[in-house]
Image (cartoon, rainbow, N blue to C red; front, side, top):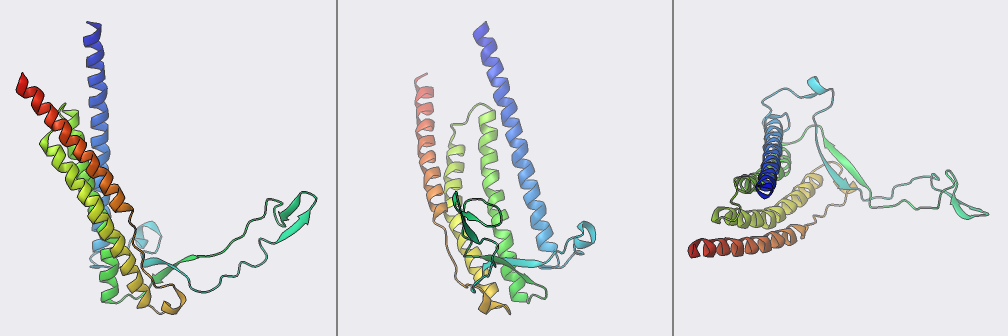
Length: 232
């Protein structure tokens, strides 16, 4: 009887945890969807609504980060002195440090062109769209697990889709962000002040490969479950 009670308690806790994760997933998707709507209808894309500066007090401007291509003078803020305890920072007495590049600055476009708006919109919206898709796949897996049957063909397909989304979509996102940022900087008045080179991360490919391995393990679990049900 105690075993049954313990099993029921564990099932109840897992059900509560599952519902909590589902709620978090729905909340994340809702917030991302709201962000997409705000960006798409904002003054920098379709310009279908007033600027939120009238509501929140901040400027809703189009901006991208970039690495500046000229020496930055930090003055004598980090000057060193020799003391009885060795070399120290003159201002704080702490161990000496050195501050240098690369230095990132924000480039703000106050009167962007149509092509700049389009590039910025793709840069800003692709990430949230891919994230919503990934969270939706995870939501389906969590919901299936909460109902007591995680090792299903549907969940296996969700994992394969998630692996492809992370590997291909993540690499695409990294590439798009790098190249759109480079194009926006190159076509700005401050182009000669920034490093205009795009970088692409290989981390999404690694994460996608790990998820593919998990999908393979899931396939084994689905096969074992089917074998067990076939012998009963």
